[in-house]
Length: 607
Image (cartoon, rainbow, N blue to C red):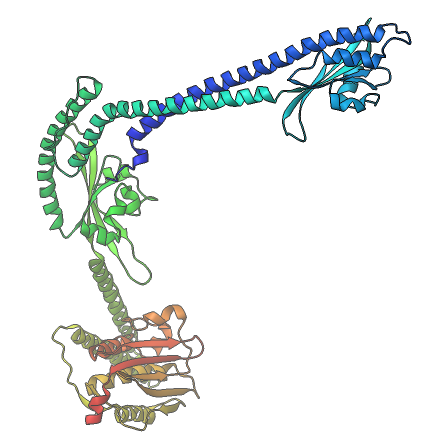
């Protein structure tokens, strides 16, 4: 079992969750508290200043509506004295603006008296005069980067706006206080979380210690150790679980002993079986497969477990699992390819409980490829031999019946009929001789009489015989080496191989065609080739020409007296010599039959 990492353990998760809950609770409380406190401090600050501004506005209205004589101080001087009484640490500057001219008529800042008499163009002042309402905003002072609160209050007299008071107050002190409060709150949160984490660790240990013991016991049980017991720490729910776990361990130990005994019996039986065995559960999913079955189906035992049996056997399109449960006869599973046949027979047996409930299925697989191949070859052989013998016999019977009916009296027809009968008889004799030859080659006690022969001279002698006896106008082209090549062969059998191949080349060569003979010397073998300029062999048929009774053009082959066994005999004899035979052909461009023979250069040097 994979070991649980530290950060994925329930101990750490419990502590993290516990701490996070406290942290979230404190953050929610802190955010609400800080936000409300900040709002309260800022509101109190602004309310206090607005009350002072309202009192200031009352005094300024009196000064602005007061009737003055030339001897009295000017309005600007009177307002300057009024503003001096309203100076405060929190207030940076107070300006009074005339509502008609928009000019500043007073400023509380001693070093900023030069602005008196100038026009006030700030948007905040304009809005307060037009809308007749207080307008405020928090700005950043360019030099000190401190936050300041700007307020513009209209001055009303008799319901009409006669001016405005422009106030700049230092609100940064409020935010400084909030920053100190936040720092205190953060420190308190860190201390509280540290204490919470320690308490969480202690609390988590009391819960996770029994669970950790159970985990160790489960791991020991998975390894087959049932002797270990879980320690019981109390009588609570976890303690009860620990007691139940110990009882479960005891029962599992007893069940495991019984199961192990049955498993050994079953494993012993399956191991010594040569047939493939597959077992499924009640839903048709594979729960057991032995090694012979895995080899027959070319699958891995680990990957097929839990797969449906109908999918594994390739029966998805034809059968369901329910069909297999009712199958009384064996099924033939054909996995043959174009290159190689492969056939299995599957017998099925249902696993049932005493109540009759289906608990699964057993499938037993047998490889019947060789048996089926032998049966097919036997049937084909009997059919071919019967056909090859029936054709000349039918022809002979027809001609003999005609002769018996009086055709023997006709001096022109009778000789032709007798000649056909003789030809068919010779054909049957050749067929029987070829069959006897193949029978000898198939026998286990077949022996070759080998001797060292100069294959170049031997090949020349064979070609000479055909050149003297040929009936067609066919040219022989000998591309043979001048030096001697000695190979160990059975001269009679190799004569028959060459005779069969050259006979086929002559049969299918057209008038005026050419047959080429060649020998290629290689390090460990020689390659003998005979090529013609005949009609050639179709690509799909070239691999079958060495099969018994196979003909590309059956009608023409029979007309030329062939039995369909010549190349099959040649193949068997070449294989008996330790060589191989093959064909190359292109339809319409002739055929090349080649075979190889073992050859050792050192042996030839000794000769």
